[in-house]
Length: 109
Image (tube, rainbow, N blue to C red):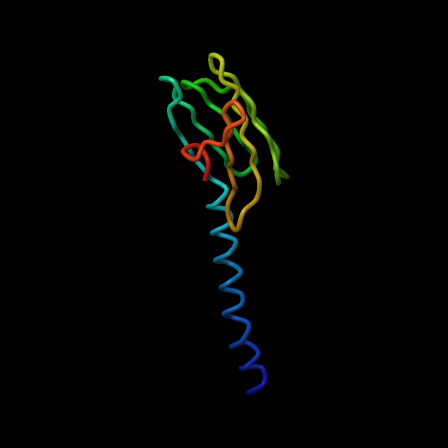
C-alpha cells in the first residue's frame, strides 16, 4: 500500500505541471500586437488556428490552420511593405515584424 501511495504522490505534481503548461501554451497562442505607421493602425492577431494582419480595421492577410507552427503574413500600406514572421516560442507565438526590411520592435514580441 505504501508503494502505491508514493507512486500516486509522485504522479499528482507531474499531472498538475502538465495541465499548467497546456493552459499557458494555449493562452500564449493569443497574441495582439498593435502599432502606428504613418497614421495607419497596424495590428497583428494570433490565436488557436488563425493569424491576421489588420491595417486600419481591414484584414489584409489571414491564415487559418489548426497546425500552424510557422507562418508569414504580408501586407502593404502606402509605400511600406509589411512582413510578419510567426514562429513558436516557449509557450507562446513569436512575432517578428519587418517594414521595408527593417525589424520593428514595437510590432514584434
